[in-house]
Amino acid sequence: MSLASRRRTGRRLLPAGVALVVAALTGCAADGGAPAVPGTAVATSGTSSGQSSTSGQSSAPVPGGGSTDGAAKGAPHGAGTPASGVTGGPAGTGITVSTPPFENGESSAYFSTPTGNIACSMTWTGPGYPVDVLCQIADRSWQAPAAPADCRAADGDVWGDTLQITDKGAALGCRRNGNGMRVQSFPGLGYDHAIRIDRTQCISRLTGITCTDETSGHGFMLSRQSYRLY
Image 1 (cartoon, rainbow, N blue to C red):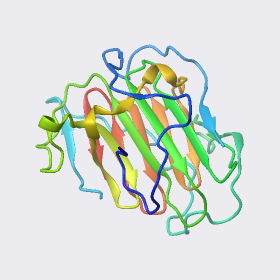
Image 2 (image 1 turned 180 degrees about the vertical axis):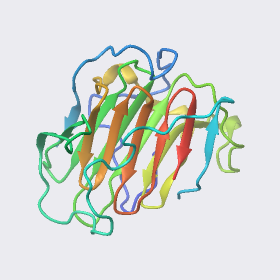
Image 3 (image 1 turned 45 degrees about the vertical axis):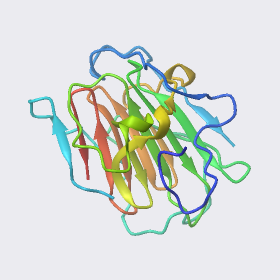
């Protein structure tokens, strides 16, 4: 069952060949360890609450967190022609940005952090629709707030280890029946590299993953030590 609602029914979270399973995602202490993947390798396929949580320490702001391309907010989703390729980020940011191609009515990317502790998916079905973003963390030292009534551990649901961006904003997610992502199936996204689809971007840094929908301004920061929704 899908972890994120969307405007259309029948959302395919993962492409064929990428299993949806209950997985013990093997992770290092934090996405603050030594880079295991120096560059970018990405698998591609044709309600913000302002919450934050830490493990008792102040989480330093993610440098360049959120948008790094200086694009103005307010432009509609899918404005212009979908583009693909690899470009350098804005001058002085040190970010390399990759844009998956838009093929067969979809642009998507699946990747993990270099430590293998966080796995993410980004999926967009074209102009008029938001980019759905989902990240799942294996090892964390922070605690999520109480699960909502419709996320029931007794039914096998798992709460608090996923963050998502949908058309409703950024929020913690519920993994229905324990379904999740196998981080082993995803290539690593090197530190100081980003994936951009339409107006949504995810950046991998030593301090964690930051994903932002520039149209709405909603997004999240996720690491072993803390998370933040905005």
